[in-house]
Amino acid sequence: STQEEVFEGTLKPVISYVLKGFESTVFAYGQTGTGKTYTMEGELHSPEQQGVIPRAAHEIFNNLKQSQYKDPVVTCSYLEIYNEDLCDLLVETDDKIGSKTIAGDNAKR
Image 1 (tube, rainbow, N blue to C red):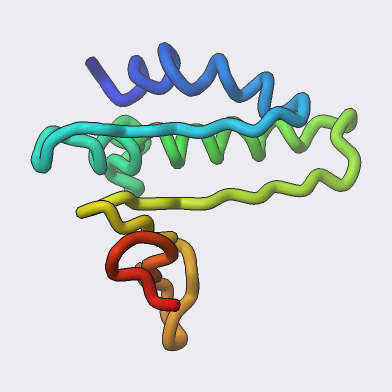
Image 2 (cartoon, rainbow, N blue to C red):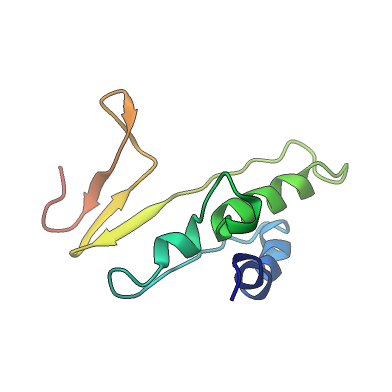
């Protein structure tokens, strides 16, 4: 399947519910090396190879340009579960974006 086909068949139908105020989660699960990161992120500089995350962001923000949306607020998290540790990949640490463990055996408390 192409990146576009994956997006069109999985995440795009959910976006209409997100725009109505519902929360949504996209979850990729599988063994190391099976393409989860590629499916989620893809190649950001190639429109044909972008994954579901950049495609969803474009879809959401393009829809929010419509006049029916007044003062929209968008929040997101980008979490990774690896070796039973939950990391927020968007948390800023030491003046850079990095991985901060927020739950699990190695959690920084």
